[in-house]
Length: 448
Image 1: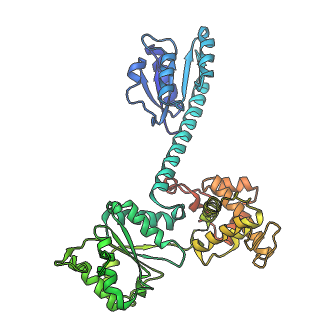
Image 2 (image 1 turned 120 degrees about the vertical axis):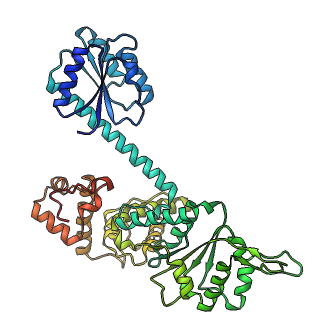
């Protein structure tokens, strides 16, 4: 049993009996002789509950309850009452007290009520933690980079470290997986967020105008045009599709970055250059990049997984893209039919986030390959739809059971062997559905 009972009773003998009863029941107890001393250390994050006598000198139990309710209305308070105080306790119950017990209270009744209150408190604190984490994560990275898969957790941890250290980094991943989103997240999270994020599209860089692109240009009649280096100074320069830049131009860029200075167009003296350098590539570009630039960037490697490696994130990502498309197009969010959900689960999504976003926009416009009636040339075979629907039900059950295989089996009402066979067939691991802080205590029925 987790959590602590903060016991308050001015009767020393009764307090000792109650403390011993709860301790023998395996419940941690903090005992106090008066309400005011019990308030020390109590706050909205207190991982426990309060068990208090009603009639006490100074601050009585009802005044204590009122004070605690103002501090945290979700903190469970159980009141101990004499027979003459029952009406008073019932009124407190109507105002939000968790329970009241009349003296003398049996050991089983006392322990059961406290256990229920501690369980309720643990659930409240866990929900608050999840809400705070979701809010922090939403502020940290774009929704397409959210998700609980091991690959995404590792990626977010890595981009946090790169941002904090202002390290150069190489971001790899398949087309459409969100590499540019990672670069923007690093910029937004790091100390350079107040400066610019400048993107150089290496696939379209013109060799003849490369120096002008970096250093800027002077015009006879108009203002000088700053180059990318001037714009990125003290900020972040991202090389989009870095291997597409010819190696000798990569060497030219590297020499400027390592020198720490450059000559802007028309300047009479060099200017300092300090920037964070990021680069994206579809796979490991070693052998296709200038060695000096490659090894400078490869100090930190971030790998963005394809959608096929984070299938459990697809429904939430699709809903995000669906809402964004509906807002942008000033349309209602269309319903998600079973056929659409089955396609989300059955399709391989080789185009990754970009393809999923396009499918969401098409669905909002009523132009997706799968219509409301299930027609269209891209409709998956029936066997794929059935398998995808079954896998979705299993994932939902595991998500509800927080990765507990036994609980998911019970919810689906399937035999143990059948359940394991289906896990193997669909490549589902219950451990992926557990909270991070639960993964050290595996379910004994977990086949993974």
